[in-house]
View 1 (cartoon, protein in one colour):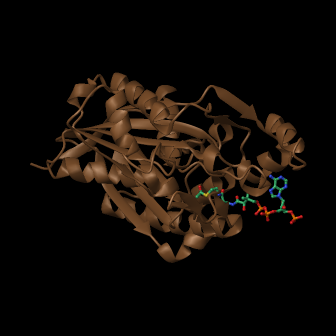
View 2 (tube, protein in one colour):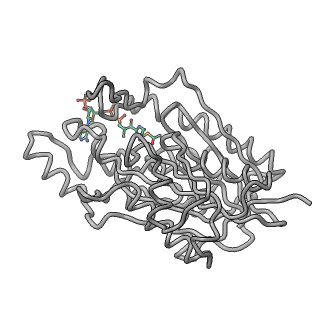
View 3 (cartoon, protein in one colour):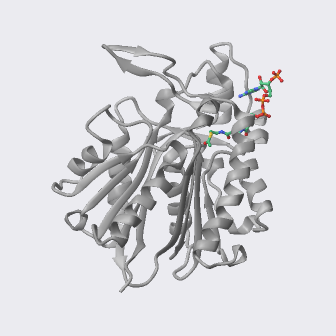
Length: 325
Ligand code: ACO
């Protein structure tokens, strides 16, 4: 009998502080940096972002999202036997943010680890949890994407600092005889690391290299649209579905222009695409589960529907998950 991983609940968490483009532009102007709501909105669709409080850790946001996901799934924390956190902004070098989340949920014993694939992180983590469940090595998994990207931004660099926000999203997966996740596909091209990275590291008590996020925006744009289009078709083929049978696409929320370009290439009407980048900006590994949770809570996503989740980001990495709800 085949086993599948079924998404049975979701949750999300955002910091309290919401900063509009106008507020950000006014703040940057005090440092002599010029930007505007008009520039940000027309280039990216972003209208606002949420920024973590100084004492708020990635694991705080992750644990809040996880608690909400467990509640929506009707599952106790003690039933969870696997925790995977996707993040590029962990609380510490070690232990993993997943271990911090486990402690904050008041449980112990279950396997807990982080996955680092930047903005594709959640889709990588979901695929990993799916493999654990299908192999019979986990029964109930908590998969979380959580970031405090505001801490790795160069607030003097207007070409990047306006694009990102903080937040977390989570899903509960349970073993089921019915699908569930029908197909997954992960890819990477490490030789593209120069187009999007944060190179710095800690060595002998010092930061070595550039500690801030750097990006060649146009190269990222071109690469993202070409790889995601192809991968969407591959994952549909694996799931034995036509692209037209996708009810919802929940793409990585980096930029409205990337999302609409991709939807056009796949002949998917924008009404079937969940877009939250305008509200949250780019929250990296948190963006896909955050968007999923918004659509789940407002009733757009319905049992039986097919959802394509797609991530893309630093590495360069990209991944797709095709799930039936
Ligand atoms: N405000 C005002 N002007 C700005 C800003 C800003 N915040 N940032 C850059 N500019 C200026 C530049 O200095 C440049 O001015 P110049 O022509 O006088 O030199 C001009 O705007 C155009 O700059 P470009 O970088 O060419 O702008 P572009 O039209 O390519 O838009 C953007 C930049 C939005 C980043 C675009 O390249 C893009 O959408 N890239 C996709 C990448 C992306 O979304 N990445 C998110 C993270 S990656 C990921 O999650 C996968």
